[in-house]
Length: 548
Image (cartoon, rainbow, N blue to C red; front, side, top):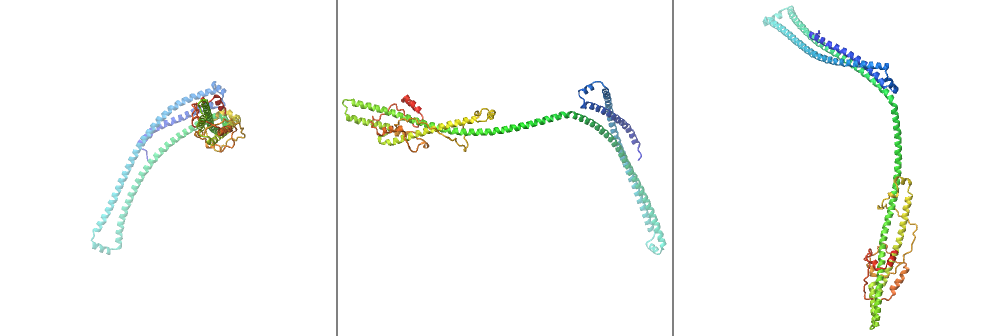
């Protein structure tokens, strides 16, 4: 399809911006190449690992290389300025070309659309004309045939046809067929002409599409060239950067290796230190568990010893209270006997006193004293003697238990001292003094703990027994002893208890009407406290009791 005048004008208008853009791109390529070479030279000069202090001094001095570098930098600056200007012009030209291409495309599109509409309308008109011609031809032929047939009557025509010769019929048929062939040929020619015109229209449309594809291909070629140029430039930059990085890595690899070696050594030392500390911690934990078990055992033993000592102290207080009450009763009995003797002497010294009456009165006073002091007559002395024997044996058993517990306490203290002395030196160095970490013995030990066995108990002499003269009533009023501490039966009597029992069983007593001494300071029931006891007893007797 020949180009129209409008398309020629648009091609001329687009040719000049494209030529200017191509010149700008060529200048840009040259400036980029020069700039890349200058940058590569500078990078190689700065990234050379073999350049030390001497190299820096050499670069600082004026030399042909530095002059070339300065010239390259100046050329790079000029080319950079030109590149900026060319880039600006190229951008302007590209924008102008894009706008021109857009305007031309819109105009060409409108022209192509108009042409297509014009060809379509022409084709429709020609098709309508050919249709009208064909219809007119068919109508005319049909009208002629009808007129020819209608000009003759039916009977005559039939008879004529039957009587006519076959030659005439053949001639008429041939004439009608010739006319039909002519009309068909004319219709075929019209259709062929119509088809040729439609084919020409399609060919024009295909040529227009081909021109558009050609222009698009040219534009794609330009863009491909630009992309290839940018790709080449990026490859150059990547090569320069790769060379610089490789040289820098060679320079810094030694320091990196040194740091890696140092880190490996530190890691090894750290692992060894952790292992050592873990082993020490495990050992100290085992020793701590051992010391705690020993402490628990000692605590349990001390708790048991404390309980035994508390029980022993309670029993000792009861024993002392019982002894004080016995001494108090003896003092009371002595005072009553002194009064009885004084009354007897006074009665005998009277002039008008009758011996028999005085004797009877003395006997009554003695019986009253006996009943008041000993709680009954001499016939009930067997129960009192039994209670006295039981009390004496209980005192002796408590004394023996006290000696046993004292010996056990001494052995436990010795065991504790040996345990502290035999403790490891490193445990003392880590935890300080071993005895400083012992807790108060308040927690119970496990059930599997066994008390330490006493290999030998050194018996001590029992304290001298005080002659007892107690009443059965007073013993009954006192607090009962624990069942587990009462002896079953007295096997052996104390040697110093026999005279007191003989004196109680066979003595002849008199009563003084049951008077009570004002200095009676008997202990309250239970024997826990002794108010006023020391005021009624001599100091020597109190000292003897304390010593006993």
